[in-house]
Amino acid sequence: MINLVYIRAAIEAKTGKRLSLERVRELLVEEGIITKRQAETEAVIFRGYGDLYWTDIPTTDVEENVDDQEGLPDHYVPGS
Image (tube, rainbow, N blue to C red; front, side):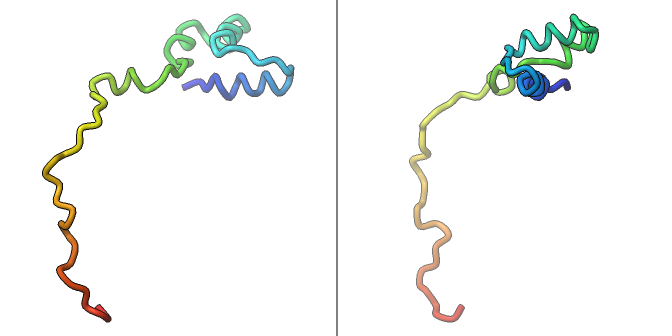
């Protein structure tokens, strides 16, 4: 995995210019530092977790049959 964010930070520290991640990837290919194939497979730009969790259905439903007393002792025994 090629860390484009890290490379962009190094460029910005040296030049004072903040490039887009797409531009950083293009420059790496143009300069022959990585191949076009590496750019496509190893220099992936993070776009969020949607690609990983597309099957998850976000919901705010709460289980109705929750016993709020479950696991609590009936009485407190001092010194135990």
